[in-house]
Image 1 (tube, rainbow, N blue to C red):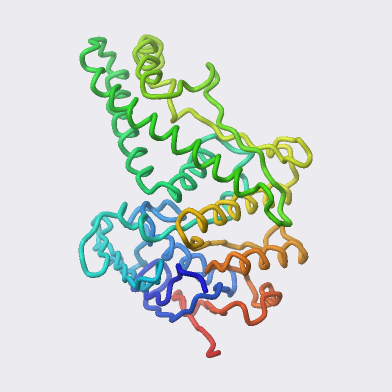
Image 2 (image 1 turned 45 degrees about the vertical axis):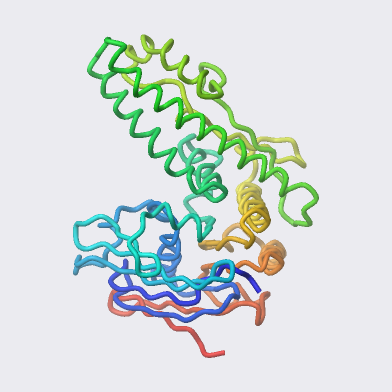
Length: 370
């Protein structure tokens, strides 16, 4: 039996759910219902058991049910590595998100030490053909799953860079204003680089020898157009110092981990992911998510929670069955959404069904008795 699973989930005024509660066991969860019924909202609630803004990257205010706008609350009981825990997270109207773990106030980043979550949502289907920002965010989620402190490094780097960019836009030329900020950017930036590369190494290792129906991807970090991203704290600090005149002309920082990109090659065919078919691109994404889960199962001691929204899109019946086999083999509690229960028929009794319907603007959750 898996050692990381959600055993209860209760929502209050969250998105389209006025009130909902479900009890669960360790098996995968198939959430089915019509489009627009509120299925993805359940997955978003589970995603908030990890640090950050969840799978939609929404603000706390956006998550509240309309038209009441009185705030929202999520209460989740979960089992992790043989321990039982409860997370309560909420936001009062207009306020920031708050978190309690086992009845004690805690920072969001502490959740990453107990719960590991990876997800795949339809918005990521265009990952390989859109801008580099989405690929960096995808890679940072993977890095965060392995190293919970990665989130702190990213936040620290981005805060220092915003302050540096403000000086650049104001055409401040006194180097004394920049040194402390650039030292902080170099320190946190080198941590980001190391965590990203370590994540890619773990994915590559997890792909070797894996019995899977999904294609392997060769992954690599690439730098900005001006050349390879400087590696290491000293190299980054030197690059920020030497590039200051150029950055002043541009009004922004032109080198650093915020300019990195993720390149992927379909290994069996030797072609870039951006040139693959839609189905192949989806399969590559699934391959990376599954490799991430396999690596975490080894490193963390339990497979992560998997959130797979509208997972049947671009998958034929054979590949869908192969995905279900891999989820079962991982012993992961995967939360999957689809428009009909028949999409999960291949899993038989190995899945627990949750139906979501919409009535008069409110989502209702039904879990059949088994």
